[in-house]
Image (cartoon, helix red, strand yellow):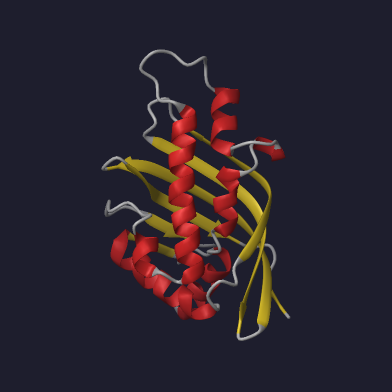
Length: 190
């Protein structure tokens, strides 16, 4: 379990995902990923459909909360970004790397927090995209990122693929699924 959670830690630097929705759209275009995907793929807005800009702004808030909590190792704040649905899942790279429900996700992050110093997570996403449904109840994000963190002065660098599915719960966006993988290149420790 420790090795799997450590591997997930390499992939968990969602700071990269957080930027995915905030600064670049599909195929590296400027603007918000969710709004770009929505404006490029959705028909013209009609009466009764959700304001996509508002959806993007709300998703940015939950991503910023997750990013800040992950960086600061604030487990309670981080867990507020996940749905309370018992099927909420975090996936890593390997077949055994799955954590389902609040209790397992909390336990995984507790272990992840042991593998880096607070406020050392940094990332750059070279590609990102996303979108949401017309009703503003479901959204998705994807990114390919370079990331680094450190532990006691030893810096780790790694590349990640990140995808997420969010849903509205009690009027707020929450992760229903978060998947991070780095199968192609192990982290480099300096």
